[in-house]
Amino acid sequence: MRVKVCGMTQLSQVEELANMGIAFAGFIFYAKSPRYVFKSLNITEIKRISNINKVGVFVNAPLEEVIHMVDECRLSMVQLHGDETPKYCEKIADYVSVVKAFRISENDNIEYMIKPFMDVCDMFMFDTLGAGYGGTGKKFDWNLLKGKTIGKPFFLSGGIEPEDVGNLKFFAQEPVAKALFAVDINSKFESSPGVKDMKMVREFMRGLNG
Image (tube, rainbow, N blue to C red; front, side, top):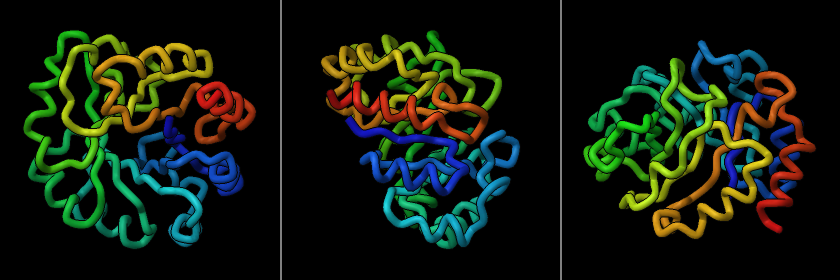
């Protein structure tokens, strides 16, 4: 099962992720986030990272800003975690792979929500609806996806923690999980915002792949 570790701010920890075989490192380009990448790293440092897929996370950013960062930081894909429209996603998709995130509540019609984005995004991400834009640590109810037809590869997100290994393996047996592309982890694996507890990440990977 592929894993993305989001909210990375430390070069040494990105290197550790790559050495663990983790597929994706997420860098948050949203200034209001406590994990805002430019608090710790600069464009040159991000650009030089070449041993892991770099995912840039943006929230309602100007189109030109996203395209500029894709080019300058050599991002592998972008994750759009705000209220971006299908038209906006389509324009970004001309430059890079697009993951559109959806913040889901128990009353949402998921298939209705994703339908306008089917032809303009490469993948989806499902997270918990909250006051902010991700990284809240609030648990996403995976049961909301059961029986659904997603039609695109998707990332599973929303408060995933080390103890969820068994639940993830169980969820992976669901028909909808045929489209599960990767698991996204963040705040439950930190000693402080943007600083990961690498022992926890390592143990999680060992359990997931064991």
